[in-house]
Image 1 (spheres, rainbow, N blue to C red):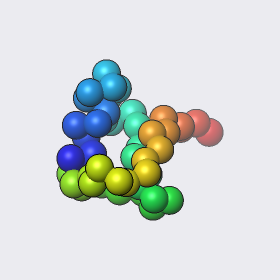
Image 2 (spheres, rainbow, N blue to C red; image 1 turned 135 degrees about the horizontal axis):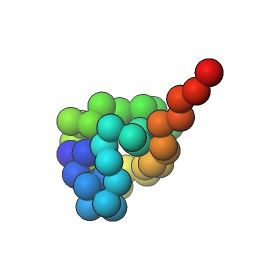
Image 3 (cartoon, rainbow, N blue to C red; image 1 turned 135 degrees about the vertical axis):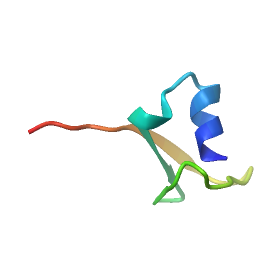
Length: 46
């Protein structure tokens, strides 16, 4: 699952987004070995 990737990297799931093959995915999404993913921090402000 996508959140497992974040945990394996030592990143907080609530503070990061996973983008798979150019599309934002929910943290409970199953990932395949050939998926290309990006991990981006959540940015907020005002």
